Length: 215
Image (cartoon, rainbow, N blue to C red; front, side, top):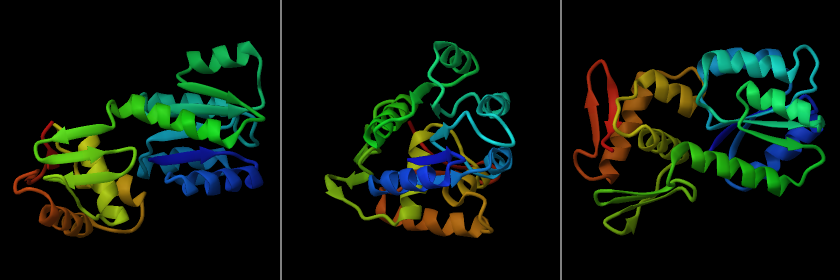
């Protein structure tokens, strides 16, 4: 799971990042909300965690900006605001969950996993001879586990979550490499790695459209 954490408290943000990454979640921590729209132009996330009380731009304003362009990515509000009116406003603007401070980090972890399961549906999938456990990040081919690098796993997961449609190299680059200065040749190299481990024809490619896994 890739999470964007928007939290202006640097100490809290870094401690949450460390805790979540210990539990297998990749976290990008941003403490200036004004940077978020540009980041989302080049990176894709499974869940966005958003504080409300921040300098430069309120969380509510940022929530509105995000939802103007993206109505699919789950957003969890993490804030000291506890009034029912605050919750009602955020949910009406498109938030998916709301957690008030103080809180237990494990509760945040559980809520993130729940939002992720809701987004992708069943996290245990069987696609022909390939079995995938998205939550535990495991892949079995004919009952035998295969070992994937971190980038190979992220690319494979992105294809699985978008199975049934072609995804472009640009979409893959945004999700796996998050706007880093890499090109299409890197995607092709990792696709080649995956094809060596997966059944023949499992990943379909079409020039000008990208790659897909059948549903």
